Length: 329
Image (cartoon, rainbow, N blue to C red; front, side, top):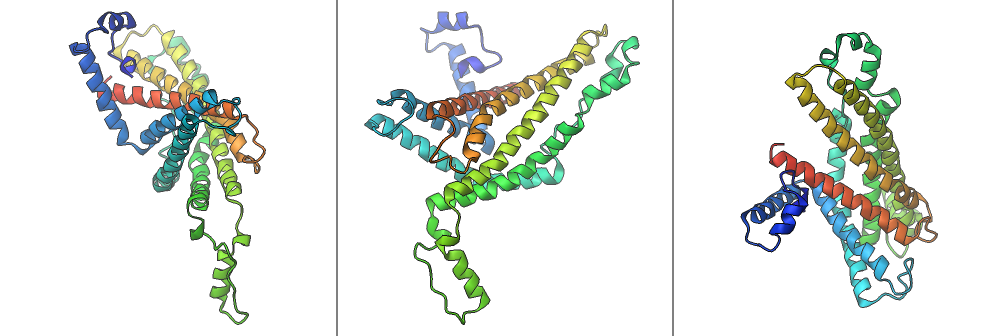
C-alpha cells in the first residue's frame, strides 16, 4: 500500500532506502497508510471491500494449496480447511453488514437519485470558435444516452430486490428456526384465519430452498451488474470524446486545465468500475442459476480468481481515492 500514495517517490528511490527502516519518508508513508485505512473503516462500502479482499485471498490460497487439484476440497489439509473457514466467516460477516446498511442506502438513492452521475460540465466556451458550431455533437458527450440513463435510474431498484432476498437467505443459512419449524405444526380445523396463516408460514414444506432464495437475490445483483456495464461504457465513450475535444482546443486557460484534470479522473474511475463489473459478470451468472450449489457453472478456481481480481481492483481504487482526498489532490 505504500506505493499507492500519489506523493510516493519512485520505486528506485524506495529500493535505495529500503534498508533504513527508521527513515522519515518511510515512516511518513506508513503513517499515511494507517490514516487512509482508518478513514476507509468509517465507510461501510470500503469496509466491505477490505473484508472481501481478505476473504477471497484466503479462498484463492485454498485453490492453489489444494492437494487434489483446483476444483476440489474433498481432501483438505488443516491449512486449506482453516483458510476456507476464514473465507466462509468473512462472507457471512459481509452478509450481516449488507443487511444493516444495504436497504437504507438503496431507498435513499431511489428517492433522491444520489447514485446517478448526472451530465458532464458544459465545456462549449472552452472550445475553439469553429468547433462551437457543432453543438449537437458536444451535447451527446455531455448527456447520457437514453439507454444508459434508464440503466442508471434502475440501479437502486435492483438492489431493493437484492437485499431483502439476500437477508432471507442469510437467515435460512444461519438461523432457519426463525423462518420455519423442522416439524410441521398442527392446526385445528376450527382455528382462526390468523392461526392458519401462521401455521402455513411456519411449515418448512412451504419454504423455498435457501440456496434458491440466494439465486433469486443474485438475479437482481446480475441486473445491477449489466446496468452498470451499460452506464460505465457510455461514460467512458463520452468522457473520452470530451477530453479529446478539449485537448485539441487552443484555449490555454486554467479553467480548461482544471476541467481536463476532472474529466480524466472521472474517466479513470469509470474504467475501473467497468473493469470491476466485468470481473463480476460471470460470477453473477453463476450464482443466479437455480442449481449453482449442485451443478456450478464455473470451476472453483475460475470463480475465485475472478472474485479475487475484483476485490483487489475495488480495494485499490477506494484506497487511492481516499488517499487523494486526504492529501487534497
